[in-house]
Length: 275
Ligand code: NAP
Image (cartoon, rainbow, N blue to C red; front, side, top):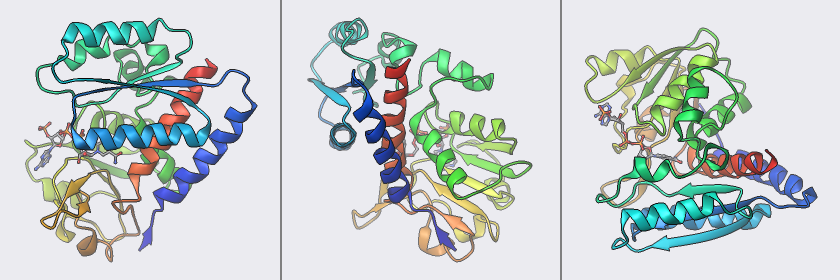
């Protein structure tokens, strides 16, 4: 088994971005909008702002209270969309329940949508055309590329079909010529399907869900999940200790996909500013 070191890969990408940003006369500027006080979201936002500081990207942070209205949120996003100083806008998800995330996201124009969540960017991915790709699946692809994983003709299984991770992940793997199966909570024979995977990407949000009997010998396993185990320790969707000796490559949690998501956000922010 070889560990895929997402932390090191992300650090080298951030260093490259820093070098590029240093040479730019007009620096990219990312506006990050957080609504409410969800502790996990607060940590994600803090990490994103810190990565901006490290790479020389200007950041603006906006926090709205949970008592804010949908109109106030949309107004803020519209203001940022029209602000020439701001080259990228990110709305931290999930929003508190009362908000309509889809309507809010529509206020971010595709050229400033550094998360790649807009219908235009997702459409480009479906058509295998250039566009902004969602940070987490893009980070997974970079890790596989760096490890020299040839996806052509491979059986790739994606566990999870969210619009932000599972679906774009499946499309990226398909565009890289893998044969892709997408599984979700209604999938029958999940174990058998997973056991057939040369490359297994797991993004379901269930602690240690993937056990050794679900993994093929020599498979490449990418764990996107971020959960807490029974002792409150951070863990992925894969039972790492049980699976690690069966696989050829595996990402740890923490230190796997997570740091890559933020590095790709910096990359997308830089690319959006250049455009
Ligand atoms: P999500 O929107 O909740 O989607 C979860 C997906 O998993 C759904 O498609 C769901 O199926 C499926 N699922 C749930 N339970 C299942 C089960 N028992 N068997 C099979 N499929 C099941 O989650 P997400 O936003 O994609 O995130 C997934 C995980 O990745 C979470 O732990 C999240 O924290 C983590 N994450 C990590 C990063 C990172 O940077 N590392 C970034 C984003 C997310 P249905 O569609 O049928 O409901």
